[in-house]
Image (cartoon, helix red, strand yellow):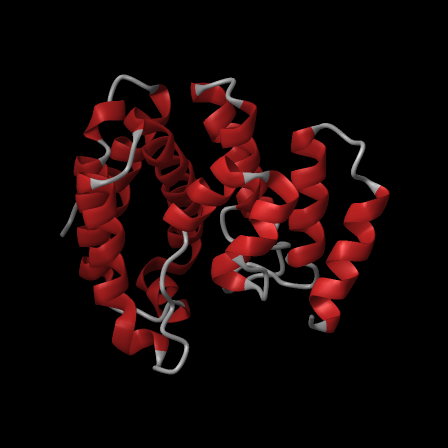
Length: 204
């Protein structure tokens, strides 16, 4: 076990009596500790917390809300799906796994961006259940809110902060994801997502 995971496990033992959401929040804060969002100094954990709030606007499913808080810990830290399963159960681990890209860490991330996004979209189209689609919508809406804010300040310089530098490719990804999530189109979150896509990428 790495030092990072030893630290996480130590803290989790002290909060194991907390309700599910609070335990997930503590875990996410520790796992993402010291990491900021791309291009700014905002703590990274603000993103999964926002995603959880978006999910909570669509459902009161506490396991799904907890999965939203945890959705990036496997993709972006040393935490594993067995770690999540052991602490939070099979269902939450299932949803976190579905939201975790295969980063192919032995390859440059810019070289795998397209295949990773295609895999994620194909999963949403063909294998995801409604819960997994809600989780994906919350993740993407949180990200797109950030993009919409920052593009007003930086313009097209914004895209330089990402592994994929082409604005048109981001537009493709967000649009294809919206279509894959059209089951959720009656929710305000999907409608906001669709509106922001048009606002940010209307010239594409």
